Length: 209
Ligand code: PRP
Ligand code: URA
Image: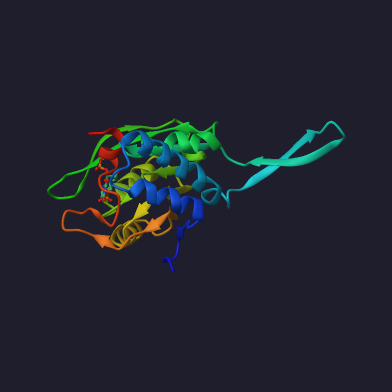
């Protein structure tokens, strides 16, 4: 049972694709395709409680009042590996604007180093999806959330594929109100801060580095 404000999306199609993604022999071309497919599938659950507003239209038969999403959307991938989910999310939310946050872990200290930020000017008025396949120590995710809050963002969800219990605890220690959506909560981190069983280094597997 996930902790509060943590949503585990354990749909069988997602779990099947995630297993293929984790498999060591899955090469970058397939890895990219699977990552985007899983991100697309997760969008349904991640956005389920987003508010809508009335939209009057005419069908070919008569007028009616339908609905549309109440607020514009901003997608913020954490570079690099978050880029691997962006096209998949955009497939379902093609009007979203994109911000980019460059954050990488220092390999010795495991602390996040922020190296790039570019956000749309109206981001504070939008629903924000912060995306990164991995939540390990939680350092990168927490730093990204802090930056977005400083930019005025109040409606934000963190979307990842694989979360470590340590990362969930660390992110929620700093930002308990931010919902975390994931496709798996794995066992633990190893001594180098990698998730077990995990999928290895997401950025390296995505880009072949
Ligand atoms: C990976 C991953 C997350 C981060 C998670 O990025 O994509 O951003 O590690 O680890 P954390 O929760 O311990 O901070 P990485 O730092 O490897 O950069 P990259 O995406 O450029 O490879
Ligand atoms: N970053 C990754 O890409 N994988 C891990 O297991 C941990 C951090």
